[in-house]
Amino acid sequence: MPPRPARPPELLVVKVGGSCLEQLAPEWWDRLGELVPPAKLVVVHGWSRMVSAATPAGQPDFIVDKHGFRSRYTTPAVLEEIERVAAGLRERIAALLRERGLRAHAISGAETRLLNAEVRPNAWWVGDELVSLTNLVGPVREVDRARLDVLLAESDAIVVSPLAVGIGLTR
Image (cartoon, rainbow, N blue to C red; front, side, top):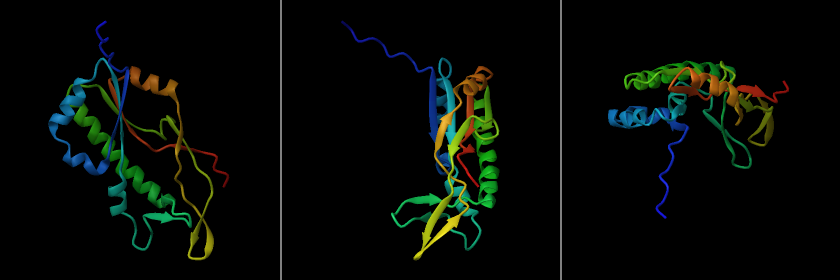
């Protein structure tokens, strides 16, 4: 019996690192655009290198606890910078997709309430002292699939800045 041809995916999710955006050739975007339709496309982007370049002097980009776990130190000021950088990146990526004839929309995962992240109060070791920190970072725990379906119904592709609504924050 011959193998069955693979069905194209209904939903294709691609992560594009913000720092590699400049290195992606136009042909890469052309090939990505050729996958849509039949698939719907979700592009999630990063921003780490751009935000690190804008971190205020004297403030760490990342903090490491006594167990060696590393986390971006995300204060309200850093979060504002992330939002500024992310807005520009998602619009730029959406424009690249539109140039290929796709109906592409750029959205924030937080503003659209598409993404929910677990954010807990943090305490980190600074030298020998355990210090409470305002660190507004946490793993994405939920994607609102119904909301995603509504957003995709209006477009071929969405570009999502992976900012999320914080859940579990008790402060």
